[in-house]
Amino acid sequence: MLNLKAEENGKEVTIFIEGKMDTNSSPQVTEEISHYIGSAEKVILDLEKLSYVSSAGLRVFVMADQQLQAKAGELNVKNVPADIMDIFEMTGFDNMLTII
Image (cartoon, rainbow, N blue to C red):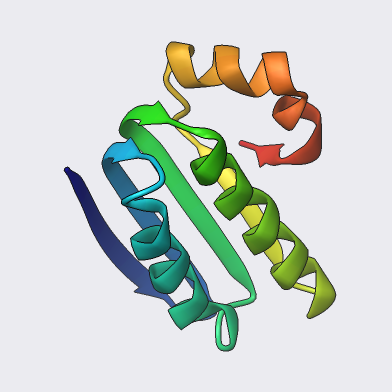
């Protein structure tokens, strides 16, 4: 089960991701992020309540980062739980993503 909530603040949007990001739920996250890529200069993903991320979920982060960079935007990730940070560190995502 995955829950998403977005809060807009001008050209910045924070998307709160709660639950598991896997093959089944990752398209939902992609769709939510894509909704804001055209208008937002900065997208912040708040992962405080993310309990699991699969390789499909990691791809969502990379693709969103690339799309935002292509339009001179910015993707930030915050409140990363320790278990998810371990995955980021093992895969090198801690160096690829801007973690605030």
